[in-house]
Image (cartoon, rainbow, N blue to C red; front, side, top):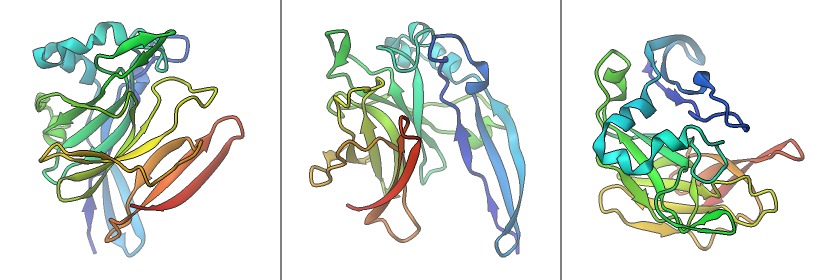
Length: 235
């Protein structure tokens, strides 16, 4: 049996909490998995490691308004900082890269950004990019997630994605809740799932099991208690 899978992973591209550069976090890479027998896989790196995402966005005039030069010098949870937390493959073999920070637009109130829009970068050619071709981006996407950033994004079905939204900042006093949204990349329709109350859960990741697009698995992280949970939610 030989089944080939090429999962892609991305680093946060952020500095450390003091604003010091961390080049090792600026990575997009692929892993080539081969099923050699049922339940057993071998793994090799797929292509090269791509390290120029932010530099390539700087060179694209469509993304100039996001001020990457400033963002990459600010701690990831500071206002206007840089932090990638969401990544989803598209049915067309592209990638949607979701930014927790920075947010687009908004107003500053008591030192915090309010009403900013979340930034989503659509990378059209990740597989050929890892084999030396230049990055090809679609038009910038801005989503009104009620001032929240993207904590994760997961493909659901057709053109529909589930987005986990949460505060761009550390949220140490639990001032802002996490919410789930459904977004249609074709129509642009965006809906907050008001019936799902996540309470004070800190959602880190979301995924669907095959053939179960009506239920999503959410991984939570409580940094203070060092506890992890996996909860299942009906959409």
